[in-house]
Length: 427
Ligand SMILES: NC(=O)c1ccc[n+]([C@@H]2O[C@H](COP(=O)([O-])OP(=O)(O)OC[C@H]3O[C@@H](n4cnc5c(N)ncnc54)[C@H](O)[C@@H]3O)[C@@H](O)[C@H]2O)c1
Ligand SMILES: N[C@H](CO)Cc1c[nH]c[nH+]1
Ligand SMILES: [Zn+2]
Image (cartoon, rainbow, N blue to C red; front, side, top):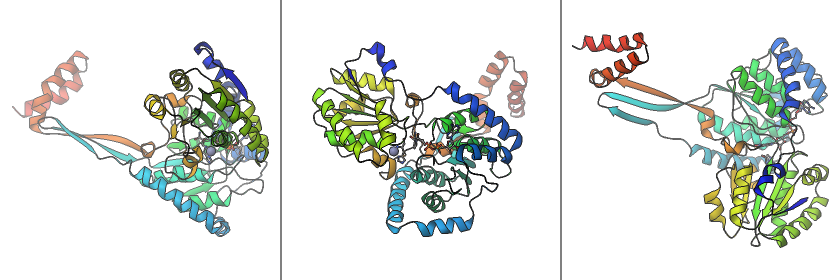
């Protein structure tokens, strides 16, 4: 791990650079695949599934039999764990429902706002290096609460051409309406344009590797909305001598094991803690089944010593981590001062894994600095706000002449007429 001592603000952006490929490199491939899927539909999807996933298939949809088989394969302990996680995710997201807003802005002019579910949505469930069935809960549970009608799910096929049974189990449990064995760029392109097998959707949700993330961003150019860029996992921990080094190391490794391009960072005002965490990381790494992946991610990671908590906070806000763990005597200071982070975890007994699986918060979060301008997935992500208004005769008399004056000043006579005619009818 790279140890950095008291970096000056001028070099923060350099040392905090993400280990991701540049968007330009990936964009060339993504654009090519999008063009082909738009023109050739399923034929192109099949071609790229064969190239990137090593699978030849002509039928993408998961059948009822496959779902039944998956349900029978899930051990009861895992079913119970999924149920508990689902319940907590449901509780937290259901509580995000808001009342309709209604205001009489002036006598006779009533304005209100109501939310409506997005009717057709696509969920991307990563499956490249690990089958992230927990992501199904994170996306399908709030989609169901919101009332989305068509919920399409795409996830890459494994080497046998199948989707992991736990993904199918969770999808079936949470009301997904169609499941397709397609992953990567070709899945995002499919849901963007629609193919013979893949329905076109209005909004695409879900995390993925860099290819998936760039593909989602390109999808927006074709009229499809996305939740946010949710790419390779990131974690930044701020910790002092009140932290337990073994816990800190375990959290760093939890995100490092996602992929070689994950980024984990420790910021501390204690050199002693940094030394202890470094040793712990090395010893815990040895026994991890995904050691090779985590080790590579750890190579890019940083242990940063700073002189005081204010410098630490400024640096963290500059970085904007996806996940932010606070293990500090001054946790209130950090909670109050953090403005750029996807999700915040406070105290020695709040591992990031809790938010990944079962505490109730959503784990689909902005990465790559997008925590500066995007929220993580929440109930509102699945809805649109619509406004309504109803104006009485008294109301049009109250605002009519203001509208006429403004329309005239903008040179829009027809706008003015729409009011004038009504006002005249009331004389
Ligand atoms: N930000 C979040 O909220 C969040 C949540 C969960 C997971 N994640 C991240 O999601 C990612 C999951 O990645 P993954 O790879 O395991 O699964 P994935 O499903 O995102 O990607 C796998 C697919 O990528 C495609 N692919 C692979 N190599 C390619 C290449 N060279 N060119 C074009 N396409 C290629 C293949 O089609 C493959 O099926 C991880 O980086 C993890 O950290 C992020
Ligand atoms: N940490 C990931 C978000 O970056 C989510 C996840 C799913 N499973 C385990 N972790
Ligand atoms: Zn995780």
